[in-house]
Image (cartoon, rainbow, N blue to C red):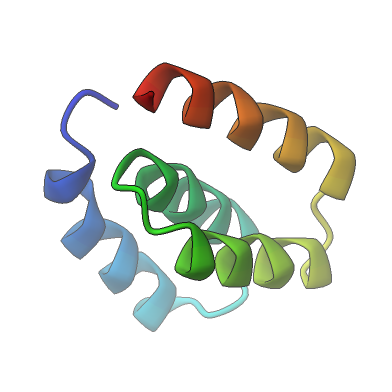
Length: 70
C-alpha cells in the first residue's frame, strides 16, 4: 500500500465489474484513507459493511492506516 493512488483505478474497476465485492470496497477505503480522502473512505466502509464485512475490524484497520499516513 505504498502507492495508493496507483491502486485506485484497479479498485474502481473491480467494484464496477462486481458491485458486491466487499473486499474491494474495504481496500479502496484503505487507499482513500492513505490519500486523506476520509469522506469517501467512510462511504466505502459503509458499502463493505452492508455487504457483510465486520465494521469493528474495518474501523480498527482504518485507524491504523490513518495513523501510518500521518
